[in-house]
Image 1: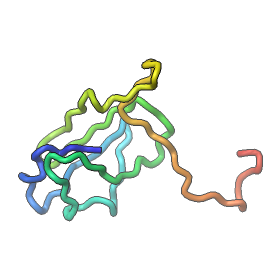
Image 2: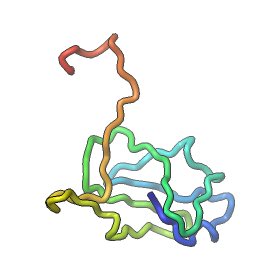
Image 3: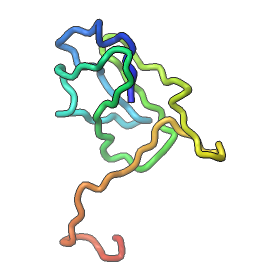
Image 4: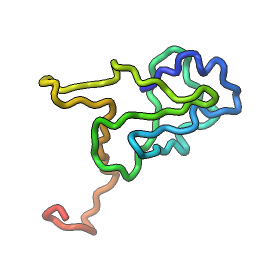
Length: 111
């Protein structure tokens, strides 16, 4: 989720909303999901579709967003989440997704 503040109202129509999105040290991929036609609404929290790729499951990874013409995004303290005990906190969690399962390859015991 991102709140671009007033950036979209000042962005030329030929620019994508941002140069890059990183989670921890991994760049994300938004090819085919976001282009110059994608316009973020000013001062509104909204989701941004992207794929993390070959990253392993992790937590506490800080996002790094470089908005076109405006620099890097500010991560608010309210973006941090914790478990009920307060001993496990994170800003972003990466969860793997299984796209396809095939019985033609692999092992029955989980290999």
